[in-house]
Amino acid sequence: MAVVASAPGKVLMTGGYLVLERPNAGIVLSTNARFYAIVKPLHEEIKPESWAWGWADVKLTSPQMARETMYKLSLNNLKLQTVSSRESRNPFVEHAVEYAIAVAHATFDKDKKDMLQNLLLKGLDITILGCNEFYSMSSIQIYSYRNQIEARGLPLTPESLASLPPFTSITFNAEDSIGENQKPEVAKTGLGSSAAMTTAVVAALLHYLGVVNLSSFSEDQSHRRKDASELDIVHVIAQTAHCIAQGKIGSGFDVSSAVYGSQRYVRFSPEVLSSAQNAGMATPLTEVISDVLKAKWDHERTKFSLPPLMTLLLGEPGSGGSSTPSMVGAVKKWQKSDPQHSLETWRKLSEGNSALEMHLNTLCKLAERNYNVYECVINTCSLFPAEKWIERAKEPSQAEIVKELLGARDAMLGIRYYMRKMGEAAGIPIEPESQTHLLDTTMSMEGVLLAGVPGAGGFDAVFAVTLGASSKNVTKTWSSLNVLAMLVTEDPRGVSLEDNDPRAKEITAAVSLIQLQ
Image (tube, rainbow, N blue to C red; front, top):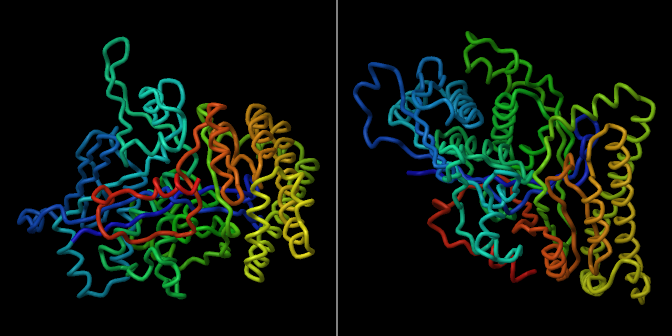
């Protein structure tokens, strides 16, 4: 029986750069853009030669990139060896497979290990699929969904994006000027595709192999168990696989949100992965994984989501994207060269991040206290620009809500100011001039609470948080400015099991989102 797991992409709303260092926090929102992993047996019966050779077949298929990779898995050292072209390898999936199987070997008793052996000898058939929104960004000579929309003569609107088939191919089939086939290349939107993909594969495999039971972590979060110990295993293995695959230990907020959903996040100490990072070729994988599982994972996560009646929007300006590692490197270089000024900027940013978090949490509490008043204020403010909000508050209870809304806006303006200041000092475009103009225009619109650049910034994307039904006007204005509003909104749900192959389901989420806008 096939196991299908999905994990969400993310938007880092606050904490860009700061979240790389403890104890700085970041607010990360999980989204409705999800990566799917489908795991099932490759063969109906065990091949006799598999017993003799001690190898299991593993097939990895990525339909969107027209790639299929065959591996042999050593049942002795649990390492994968490709029997396909090296160009089609996916190190994130490879490490996810090896580490997930190693967890089973490290934790199972003898009877379970025998069952595991029989399961692996049937082979593993793994398929990965990413929602279209992971790959909407365009740049020179790179095929994208924006190109498809423009080729069809459609406007740059969510409706046009929704008209594309789900899980559309992202392979470049054309030939270049000298007749050679172009390699499939993907420019990404900054939603954390590698983290979501790695998490989905790890979750599907751990459930398939019987290491964890994710059945209770379904779409309905209200029925989730308070005990998240099995999700914790998914988190540790996904973090390990993702860090080792990318060759560095990042902050991990993208994997954490892929596992647990929207949250306030403080990174783990890098030392927890020292055994995996320093493991030699001769070190057994089961030993590595045992050390990682026993390590003191000191990350912090607190439940967080946007207040009611607020919508997250993500816009893709078609500028080509930025290199996050090089931008992070430039900021670190600046910190070393000018510690006094960088610490002051760091402190101001941290204060702004905390203030925004406080105002949003207070708004959630005010909504719980008197939802009718809260709803009335939000719907009224959605019709006017921010400078008109306070005069629309007729009662003290309404003014209290407006005060928090305006406080959140001021905090975001401060965050943007110091992010620009940091970018200028480090010589990198954290909030490029073109983005500044777009964000200022967005924040001046009716019903817009916040606008900014997510994560490390650059040319990747912009986000906005709107009130009530005002998001529809924002998407129209963005379209007139050549900005594609993506079908992405906040979904606080983390990793989940799905009923079946997502390609077999009628996709209604995009249509519902458009109706809301």
